[in-house]
Amino acid sequence: MELSNYQNTNTYHNATHAADVLQATSFFLNSETVAQMVQDNHATAALIAATVHDLDHPGRGNAFLINTRQRLALLYNDQSVLENHHVALAFQLTLAQNGINIFAKMQREEFIQMRQSIIDMVLATDMSRHFEYLTKFQQVIPNLPDLDENRESNSMTVCRMMIKCADIANPTREWKLCAQWARRIVEEYFFQTAEEREKGLPLTMKGFERETCNVPMTQCTFVDMFAREAFTLWCDFAEIPQLLNQLETNYEKWKSMSTNWEPSQNVDLMISKPA
Ligand SMILES: [Zn+2]
Image (cartoon, rainbow, N blue to C red; front, side, top):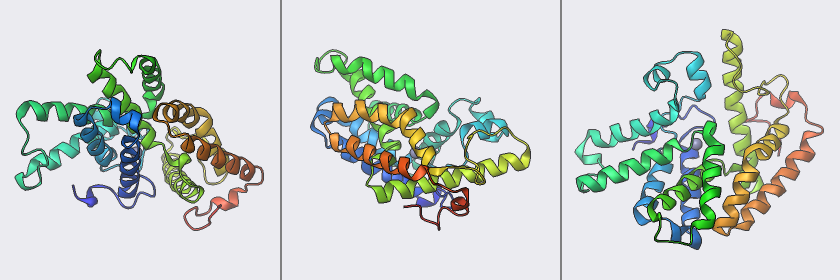
């Protein structure tokens, strides 16, 4: 997989984000409880899924692609457009040449299973279905110790939750990285909003306008809406309480910064460092 298949002009959705999610996934797999529940073939699939999960991301979200009726939206019928594209392209690229086919040595059945797991996990990163996956994970946790029953499907439920948490792990990183990733994603959203304004399209990421945005507030909102609940469940399960502690420490920092944030600080988030 060439790095060039990630778009390095994106401030957020670039190869470094993929590497970051891969690192988080690998870290999670090192947890004893996670390792116990996740089958070996699923662990391998998870590492590959993390690596390719945002391949060729255009720096615009699903809603934007749908509103602008882009080729990918039409191809995937407006359903998990980007996630379908990331994983489809990954397989197209690796299967295109024998020399770069990482699955070349696999038996047919083994490949089909591996492919199914990778597709499943990448599709799980679609945030519009966030609460579905969370609920499902919550439902199976109490039954997980009964290893024999539903072992395979439980392993996949854990993997879906794992890659989702790896994908939104920015608020659990040490402050310096947390702040850097926040600046990067907000900057990418600013560009999207600007294009939507220019073309008279609906604004798909409300609040992300350079002229008015309170950046620290957006991060508190993300934690309140998505990250805290996900990491409360995940950190408890994986026995990694330090991540949840870091999330709360970062949250308090954002909260105190939000009170005197000036939109003038949004001129270029990649240069002006709010940290
Ligand atoms: Zn991602």
